Length: 117
Image 1 (cartoon, rainbow, N blue to C red):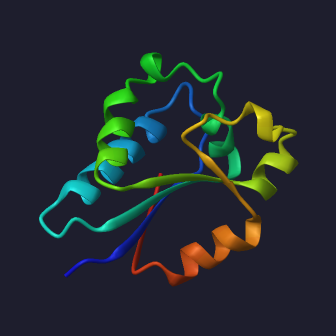
Image 2 (image 1 turned 30 degrees about the vertical axis):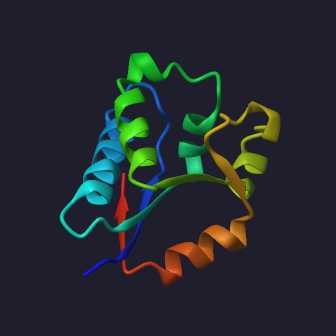
């Protein structure tokens, strides 16, 4: 049965495996047997990972992002987390949508499942 799944990326992109592993998990959930609807939400320090300046090659995530997008997955960044960290909307990668903090909260609340990385 198809479910709404939100994958929360809450940690900074470098020096840890959380961002690439979270994206890899999101890709797998989206491509699985039931092809769940998956949204990756960059929140807390994960907002840094949504920036265009992040070296995705170094993090080994381009394939994960491409597969997620191919399966209809979405990526959003929490505007409240951006504001708290002084990240401007212009800094966000083209394939990531900026969502208001209350939208992200609602997305998490309404999800059938959440995964936290």
